[in-house]
Length: 153
Image 1 (spheres, rainbow, N blue to C red):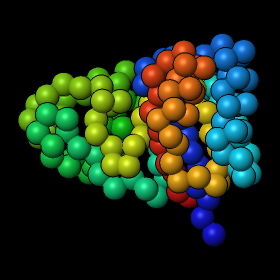
Image 2: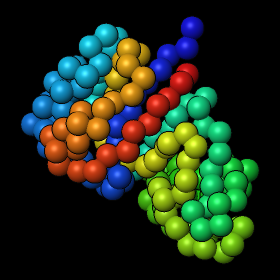
Image 3: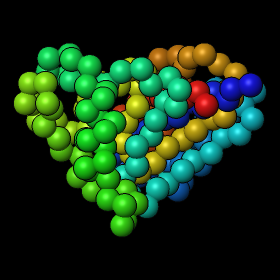
């Protein structure tokens, strides 16, 4: 049986909320995902790729909309990950399709994915979506704009 993980990450990859805000967000997430097996917050030492697991289907260029997943997985990710510090230190790339410059975080991931130093996660949340009000409440609680990632493993 597969696990579904609801992941919320800041849209700014470097943002990490205060420990007080994290506790408040965890409490709010418990009200949203009432049947969740586990709610956790992860603060990484550096920027990490937060993936949707098996749900990742495409990586599109925001400029020309071309699917660049092959280049992204074989070149872009490897070239921007620093194995010595085990994190991404530079997210700026130039796409092979139209020679546009973007952050890896600004590519269009289908399903959503992103880069972050913080993630609020719910294992098997028992919900298939978050209402607009719940989402805005989590953003206000954490003090940042968020990205929702639905991961399947």
